[in-house]
View 1 (cartoon, protein in one colour):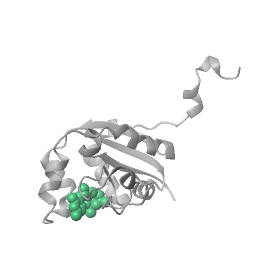
View 2 (cartoon, helix red, strand yellow):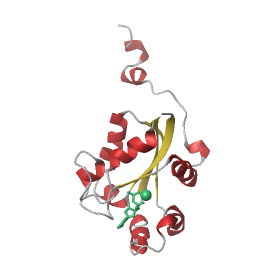
View 3 (cartoon, protein in one colour):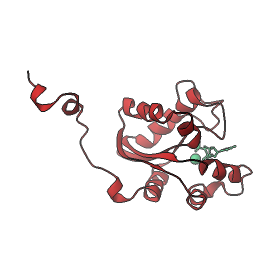
View 4 (cartoon, helix red, strand yellow):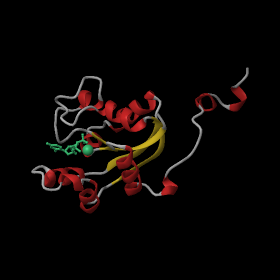
Length: 157
Ligand code: UDP
Ligand code: MG
């Protein structure tokens, strides 16, 4: 299992319900590293590209309408087997059927307003990251918890 990067979108329902911080916290607590994070108001054009595989589905126009109804929070998460881990943490699409303990299972009752998007494969993740993030918006750094729990002069006392 390699170190992977995956894309998440905290959807308009979660942003407007004040759940963005809570949802991002879950990934941090799990041990995933945030390597990109920003707010954006997605256009219908970029959403039509992002959801191109669903064009023709009866819910497609409503989905684009919903996803462009307010700003969203976009993130890139890095970790071992990150694509699968993040999908498991999100739960299945229909939040009514998503297991308790998953993000959708805990925060939503809906198949449409299901609080989070996550890339479904490594190939999709690479495409989605490139769609929403410029290279200079992604950061390589070592997660070093100790360094940020204490000031340098407090260490070693
Ligand atoms: N969606 C919907 N109605 C459906 C199925 C999906 O509104 O019957 C929306 C929902 O917001 C979902 C998104 O379309 O998250 C993308 O669908 P997909 O099948 O890719 O589910 P996901 O990968 O998000 O679990
Ligand atoms: Mg999907």
